[in-house]
Length: 258
Ligand code: M1P
Image 1 (cartoon, rainbow, N blue to C red):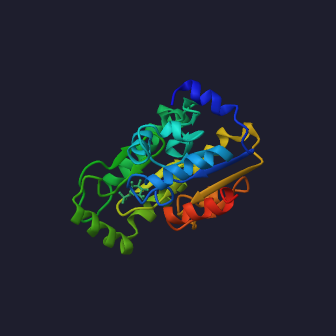
Image 2 (image 1 turned 45 degrees about the vertical axis):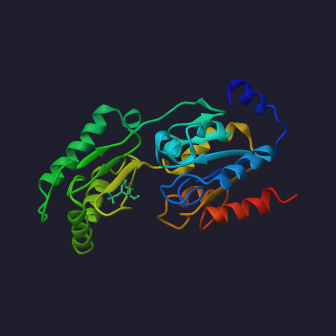
Image 3 (image 1 turned 60 degrees about the vertical axis):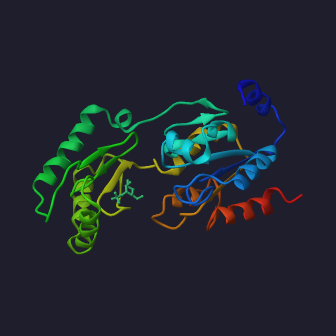
């Protein structure tokens, strides 16, 4: 599917509707490759509406799950919640945490975290206390290269000790006007990213097209889940699904039944 094919698709008569999909748990089973029946559904759907995918992981991870031709399978692809963006396979502007904060503020934040961790009195510490990712920092008081057993022990310990919760409160107080969001989602760490850099970020790339409806399909649509904000957004019509099979069912009912 080359550039010419994509240009042809641009001029197709499709409904002025965009249908966006989360990846893990919605298009695929968590961390697994997409199934053939889902690929077929996406191809049919693309004949009648505009399609897109938005996921938290980066493009190489999405290529592993959806295929190396993932950019050709949707009209819009949004790795990293849209910090990276592709329209008809062509790259749009990208954004990064260092671009947003600048090196000086980023270091101020990192230095505060490292001092804070140095002063922590916890049962064990290992290495990689801060992991720098394109769109976020992941901060871990025990360190990300702890063993699986140490990870599980820390998780249990932190339920009582609230090390991460107290750390986040200190950061919120110190960086109160920095427009940052803190998310304690896993076992040993928390994520730090600018407010709005959840999946709603990708909507910035599609407003200019004036879609009459933007549908979003996701499985973690509950509060605290990473689909919550875009599912609840007044700009989207949200669909909460329980599995890829459920996605197939609802999409077929809504868009492919006649
Ligand atoms: O998906 C939830 C979190 O999973 C990991 O957290 P942890 O290593 O603490 O279990 C990290 O990938 C984190 O970024 C993510 O939010």
